[in-house]
Amino acid sequence: MSQQTKILLEEHEMPRRWYNIVPDLPEPPPPPLHPGTHQPAVAEDFAALFPKALIAQEMSQERYIDIPDQILEVYRLWRPSPLFRAHRLEKLLDTPAKIYYKYEGVSPAGSHKPNTAVPQVFYNAQEGIRKLTTETGAGQWGSSLAFACAQFGLECEIWQVAASYRAKPYRRTMMEVWGGKVHPSPSQVTAYGRELLAQDPQHPGSLGIAISEAVMEAVEDPQTRYALGSVLNHVLLHQTIIGEEALLQLAKVGDTPDVLVGCTGGGSNFGGLAFPFLREKLKGNMDPVIRCVEPTACPTLTKGQYRYDFGDTAGLTPLMKMHTLGHAFIPEPIHAGGLRYHGMAPLVSHIYALGLVEAIAIPQTECFAGALQFARAEGIVPAPEPTHAIAAAVREALACKESGEEKTILTALCGHGHLDLGSYEKYLAGEMVDLDLADEQIEAAMQSVPEISST
Image (cartoon, rainbow, N blue to C red; front, side, top):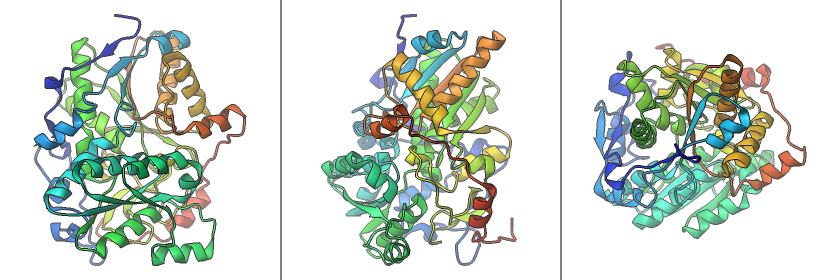
């Protein structure tokens, strides 16, 4: 192989279907529940938030769903995305392991998020919706939705977690370039936001709060709907184009992963990469260890409880069974703003509970140390979120160095860090600190989680 192995697919080889893992699981995932009755939610319970096509995908039992041509046309702006072998990082680590990374930073927004933003906007446009509201943390999702809305002529209104709004101003500018209207959350726009700001004018915000504000605005206008950037089944479904492409690309060089690692906040990047490989594992075609990697400051899988909880802080959404730190949990303003959600995607939580995947938490200084090694070897500055997967890949590669094993490691570099250089500046200046979530904080936040006897 060349010194810089870049495995590409031709345009005609790009997957034409999304993969739904639900039919292939050994046990069906627990259903979402109506927030008032605690009975299994039905399609009508989601009608104020999502278009019919997305609700159907959310509840689908079909293994594959065709990607409409109009979506493929937009995908072709950057897909198929490249799969690289990290030869230079392998040399730096002096490891016998092979490290591959699927690079999603080639999208217009610089992350994996347009993979679901484009279909979500398309299906809303098909049903005559004129505006979408949403939340965003670090800004990758908000900028992706603003980009997608620009493609199909919809308005876009975004609530960005206040800590990230203040720390990442150029993400806000990117959203505005694509026509998005951006508010810090909590905001003065909603009654809920005003209430929180009255209690704390410098409130750092959370994704749960931003979701509440976006949902409140959406339900007040019949021509407005809400779009979510992670967590729900249809979002993870759209992201599986990542893993499907990676399977085809690895097949071109006759390789399969022994270890797959992915950063895990709400679960869309991880599920997008991992689910097609888990399908192949369940079919007996390969046997990779599949590992979720999360921050120690927001360790949803490794310290959260697996139970029904609200997806937002105000308790407006259907209840989902997921690993949660409690919907009232306000995470510390760590640099990986996209990994600061209190809950984990129900599908990721379910496969973790079934023992099909592993999970670890890594502190942010180790993540940024790995990011510097990666950037200096491979030339790409990673976003703070995938630094967690990079750190896990480095750990695995160094373990191979000690043992002499020649494992193949696969990860997704889900975005570049060109708009996150302030985080790197703090790390290089020695000002970054590690934050471990205390059990007492989790216990306090879990007090507001409803008790659901049916589970």
